[in-house]
Image (cartoon, rainbow, N blue to C red; front, side, top):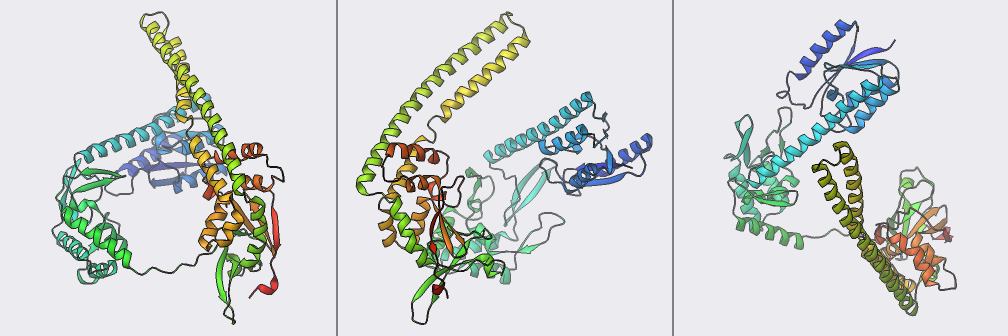
Length: 538
């Protein structure tokens, strides 16, 4: 027999905020269950905001309802169940599908009746709107405080938050830690200390600790990231940086702007002179995939007894013993890849012809966009004039308010549509043709360019061309993105108009050419290269 659930929620995990909220909700809910004769209810409590989905106790309750083990929910208000559209839709669907018989709140019960569902929809919608308005007001308040130079967040190390009144706080210098922060900047500005030296100093000698932000949090030491953040934080010379915006702070600076600039210069110098780790660059890194398990193949170098060095690629699952894909020899792939590059390579005279075609297409599309924009601007002016006339008719009492509202919404929708057309006209037009021109440049003598390029340059070229590779056993298949496949299949006839008509839409999708390989929404036909030679494997 289905049971009843009591759901109580408060929006914060802190014990000193909304302290009596859960207890008072449970007291009312238990009393209400007794009045209605609902015995032995299950109790779910949660200290988490409902603004975004992901509450574990709410998910457990929904799972029980869907299994048919629960048919009644008792909660203080409808907004305890949800303050976001996704969870609100879940509650409404459970009620509409009869999996949930009723929701009992202090305001009214909600059932699957149309009127009750409508009221619940309104209540949940209002709770979502409340959360959105609250967030908007909080952001506006924070921005106003930032313009006044006030800090609304946790105090950086060297400062402390001081509560003045119940609704007002300020920042004060932490006299215990501030001298260490000043000394940290002085030592960093000297250029004689590395970041690791400074971390060891703060941890071993000064024994600095990050203060606990909340009663249940743990106190921890200073890490490399924390020291690096301190040395790059303009807060310490009086500036507030929030989401890329810079404000003049009202707090007391710990250092001068000159000291801060000196530290930045010293750290940049150390970064330039520090030894760099060597990185192995492989041409097919990120381009070669295993057809058996779908994982990438990673490259490595092997030196034979003769002193000759070879590059192989191995499936990352094979390393774990979970894939049977054999090793792939890079030189064998390159040997046969050159034939495919020869097929798509464009010579100098062909490039000039294709460039003329692209220029003509750009000009024609520019004219079409200009005409469409002119039409949209004319339509927008007409809509604005009609809106003014409509308002005059309402003021003069010629039309009733209801008719005015209907027509006003129609005109607003039309106005938004024309404004959107104007705003987006030609937005990606120039970028689309620039990408097509870059692709044409990569096609020019692609096979010869590949032969004389370094490993890194070859990798970039293959990405620009939109070539991807699949290893299946001893066979390697080249998969071309749509634009590369169109060039590869153009045949003997050089019909550039038709070719670029097929290619241009690809560049209008907003995908960068360098991201084409590995992100194929539409693949061209596979072009087999060759079997790798087993005798070349280590």
